[in-house]
Length: 126
Image (tube, rainbow, N blue to C red; front, top):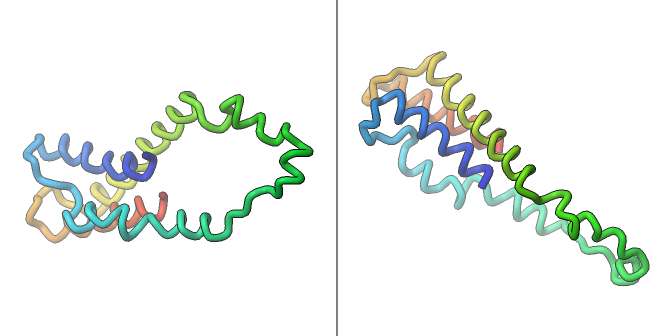
């Protein structure tokens, strides 16, 4: 959710800037390939090196699972904080390039340069 929320906030801000004309903030091929090309590799790397705790240790120390049972690391409060962080970082990733060297003219090269820079910032942030 986080990575897509961060990317979507650029579209939200652009929609307001462009009077809801229906034009997209990022090139379609970048938005389409965001999950499939750009953000899958950290998950694969973590999954490749992730190791479970041996059965002997997990049976001897059941308290290591109490954090999960108590929902200490995944609850509505933390989810809301992550979504607020995504909103802030995604908005910042759009606003900085847009106002520093972008343009509000959809056909201008400066707009697409700022758009590609914003998209790159979201990939680096995520």
